[in-house]
Amino acid sequence: MITRLSSLFLRTLRDDPADAEVPSHKLLVRAGYIRRAAPGVYTWLPLGLRTLRKIEDVVREEMTAIGGQELLFPALLPREPYEKTNRWTEYGPSLFRLQDRKGNDMLLGPTHEEMFAGAVKDMYSSYKDFPVTLFQIQTKYRDEERPRAGILRGREFVMKDSYSFDMTDEGLDASYAAHRGAYQRIFDRLGLSYVICQATSGAMGGSASEEFLAVSANGEDTFVRATDGDYAANVEAVVTQPGQPRPVAGLPEAVEYDTPDSETIATLVDWANSEGVRIDDREVTAADTLKCVVLTVLEPGAEERDLLGVLVPGDREVDMKRLEASLEPAEVAMAEEKDFKRNPFLVKGYVGPRGLAANGVRVLADPRIVEGTSWITGADAPNRHVVGLVAGRDFEVDGYVEAAEIREGDPAPDGQGTLTLERGIEIGHIFQLGRKYTEAFDVQILDENGKRSVPTMGSYGVGVSRLMAVLAEQRHDAKGLSWPVEIAPFQVHVVVANKDAAALEAGERLAGELDTAGIEVLFDDRPKVSPGVKFKDAELLGMPFAVVLGRSFADGIVELRVRDGETMEVPADEVVARVVELVRG
Ligand code: ATP
Ligand code: MG
Image (cartoon, rainbow, N blue to C red; front, side, top):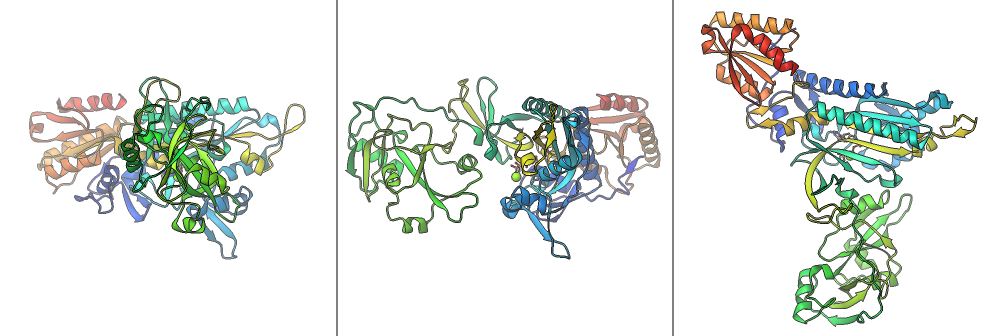
């Protein structure tokens, strides 16, 4: 079937949509692939839907190849299963909740661990049924706080989610490895530039978790890569190399000073050096000061927020995302004015670890703040600082925490080189979930010895609709989109840039021949549109190849344009074979 631009449901736009900031969003809207229905909610127009379906097919093929079985759960779900795992509550305002006419609570599924675990519990009871991997390609709903960049972060989006169920931990490792391989094949086939990053496994802890990040300056995620070796990680997952503990014996006593006008780290360092203060016999830098950041934490199920002190070297900020990841599932926020008012021992600008500990505040420290390190920090009184406060001698901490920002040039955790910071977009996540959900659902399976045993789960997601935006983000130029052959809505765009009837007829014939040869053809047969406009549209829409019947057509020559490459003059009777060759790659 040839698709004709004269009748295709499409209107390209000359201007960028007012709400669009990133290229993929601008281009997908201008080229008529998607259309906004509400913030973060998009209509798939014919070109967009074809592209989406092709991405789905690549994902489906690779999932099937590792033995995944496709099924489809509803998006409209009952509350009960999500109550069992407490996610009805934990998901907070991101969950779309609704009620049916009888007043029953329901939700639009943000992810489906509960439904899969429940189905396996109901349908399987013997170890002989395991391992099993199930997947779906389905529309998910999340009321994202900041829907962004069109389909890059939608409130309705398409995800492939799969779940593996194994009777043993080794089995889970194998399922995880199979998914990892499948994801690599998917993203390689799509021609993406991506990095596999170690991720935090949040509340579950300990088990393997990796994110696939597409490299993109417009990404919301920051990740690190090491200059040597192949370490790559999500910033949240970077583990700080701990400092070297040293004996406290013989270290100078801590001394308190009046330090007027030194509320900031910079002014404090200036004061110390103007006073001739020395730490370890050298000039003082910001890294010798200790920043005591006061926060509040809400533990799950708790009624009130508790104070928390976080200690970091003064040359670094607290990275709230890293801190949040470390403290998950507890919620954390900077202390507010009211918290300071309520707790007068917190002297703003002069908070120190001794005051926090003396008043029962839990204190967590950056791993560099080990026994025997000496610091300049707040003395818990206005305009007062203390110099030479030694960890393990003058103050103790309740534990260590990954909270300090990661900086370009920090040592790689595996000791191989230093870290560089880059931006990326998460396109996939693989995660050893363990038994959290199977236990919540009391999935009991009889093992070989007739004993009851709980299977362990893996959870794996690919952002199918997001991938379309990511491809647009990684592959476009000033003129428009440029799709890889495998997922382009059409493989070749035939443009008749010649007003005489013979050219139009020849275009018709050529489109037919390409179609017969198994090529997907988009045919610009619009009789009253100028060649210039047709060319612009062809570049905007981004099919990988275009065949142009223009001026030299009278001499039997057509143009074969490669969207991200050269333009060739080809005899008209050879062009079908050439296109077939290019498309088959
Ligand atoms: P993010 O950090 O980007 O919000 P996530 O950690 O919430 O992602 P998962 O729950 O692991 O994502 O979902 C699996 C995949 O679904 C992600 O890797 C991503 O590609 C995609 N995805 C998640 N949220 C959205 C969204 N709002 N719009 C489009 N795709 C999304
Ligand atoms: Mg999210």
